[in-house]
Image (cartoon, rainbow, N blue to C red; front, side, top):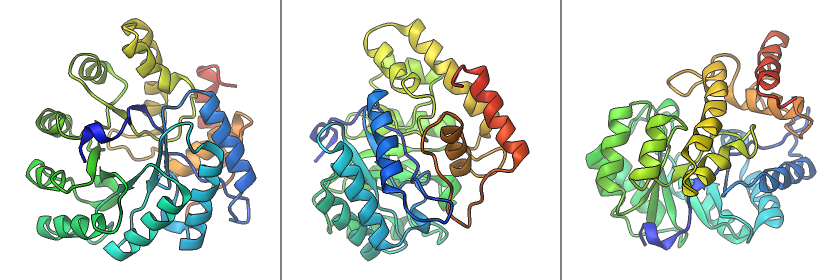
Length: 305
């Protein structure tokens, strides 16, 4: 497999997982949110990534989430399953559940917390890849793993047979650019910001897309790409400028939240807009009143409420 084995491109949000106040999975509410995302023109869906709170779900719950998502959107847009775990066997079980549900690919970070060596990370991915026939997207997520995958290691990882993409969520622009130009002909690269640099790379250098958090602005996110593909760069800039408002007001330059937790922020945003955002699951807490006001003020500024 390589980049040509999949049709993944554009804006593929890493979606939230809808929980009730008591922490139960709200399948009906989640399906409603998924239908809204599809109607807003998303180019794909990434489930149970960091935004999806994979870390607080049991294996049977993950399988139920995958089944619900597939029942709602299978065959309509590409579905990518977050399958991160602490061991290759745990990842394998997650990938099996995703395959059974009918997902089109999987997303895997290095094991969080452990801070493995390069040799250990490479072997981890090799062991995991042997357990699935699905295409794999490597996820470089320094805020969650405390490891920013180096170019030499990434070069080795993309040689694994079913690796077709990299979600490169580094905050170092020089590192992002260096990796992009080194591997873009072999695997798809995601992680572009909706700014002038991202627009330039996407419009003129063959960039693939963004696996971004939440899609709370609806069609503004996929339209950034649609306008680029149609040659309407000024219209793309307008979409990107709206996206940068939430990036500036809700997140730091290191892709972490300025207040509360990213998952709680996105869920509050959906709730405020009248969509089923639901509640975060502990240990993540809902936003405080003052934090909710920040979310509301941003959405009012952007005309979403």
